[in-house]
Image 1 (cartoon, one colour):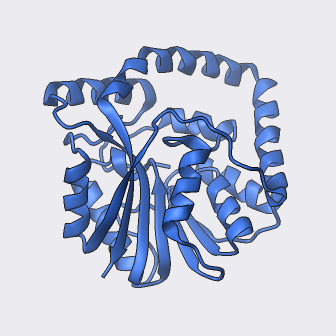
Image 2 (cartoon, rainbow, N blue to C red):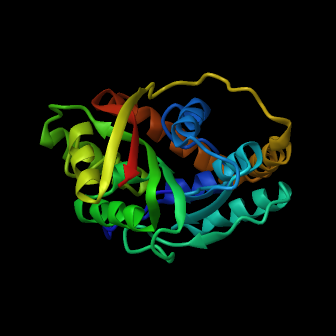
Length: 270
């Protein structure tokens, strides 16, 4: 899940989501992940890196259904703890590393055939985002793909609106809603280009898509892990209290989404 170079980054909401084993913490949910997988053009045996792997559900899905090798990094130990259990349930031994792409990734140059992220890059402040993208370019093989499902500000969103929404989200959830610089789709494409990535295309996503995707039998144990965490959370009065607290805050921020659009960025290293 997201990292952030700002000292204000204290993602208590993400830690709560880790505690309940949440999955699909990004625009268009499972549908968005399927779109991302299609854009990656995966081939069996390829080596991938997920930056901000969260509770590991996408890692497991790609490893089992596309026969690829997926490494995962996340800045939050709470997320990695759940991801380890999910991998164990699924009988996988994919590497998991606690790392922050906005500081530097602990991998050699040109290690990966593809890199992807889901709602991680989009919330980064300027300097952190640039470092993130340069690290993506560095660890990608020449010709490798970078695909990111991200929320970006709509063109013309006033700076005052960006600042107010982000400040409120930092106070309520521990991290910004989207780029502190107010970057729109074109701004992000420029940053990717400067990092050595060629943007192939940018696809529109439905920010609130909730459509179902066919369930694979190979994902049974991953789904079982999710259910186990949710059941455990319902038996914990403290977690139930936090659930009620965050539900109210999410309702408070419902209108913020009208300033955001979801995009799938597809880029290559040339």
